[in-house]
Length: 266
Image (cartoon, rainbow, N blue to C red; front, side, top):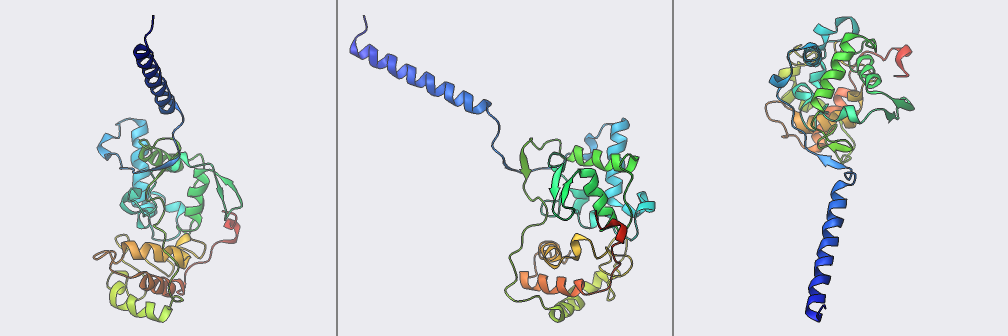
């Protein structure tokens, strides 16, 4: 026969047991979408087999695009000029996690696209070239490299530092004249007074060797977000947001190739 004291103990035990079941159930449910930090796997862990060879080729394509994809590039830029540290740097459009984010809606194309199609966009716009064959070994290599970089990103999670760090609108309208002065004083030492850079070490910013008018970097806000975080390379973060906008406006006004009409749908 249960006494009042025993009844209280039994009731407390049942509550504890139920709480345990509830916690266990929560732990088995789907993870809540959120952000995770992603650390690039060590390149030495890539296996020495056919898959590993494809991953390594993908990395080489990112590092030296005009060399390993010469037939499909029309300028002197490599993917790593914008996707810093071979696509592994946070807040510099890293590749980690991309494999799980596609297919995705693309506002510019006005349709859902695959990751391979997104890569083709980069080739016709940022590389001022032509699309990689979707079933070719270069496309396969780039996808293999991005998948390898994404291997530690849980499904449903977004990597911290995706894209470029957002930059608030400028306090004043971007001033190309002020940007020209900043460019001459700060940027020209590396990128040259005529914006031609020193390829392949330092990318050109305008002219025939640079990205075309359809590239993402041809948007002032995108360029400013990159500049304020990463430029100048010997003192990143030293420019104010307004200065970054001014420099971006100056670069935006310089001549560059036009996007080929046949690739406007990319």
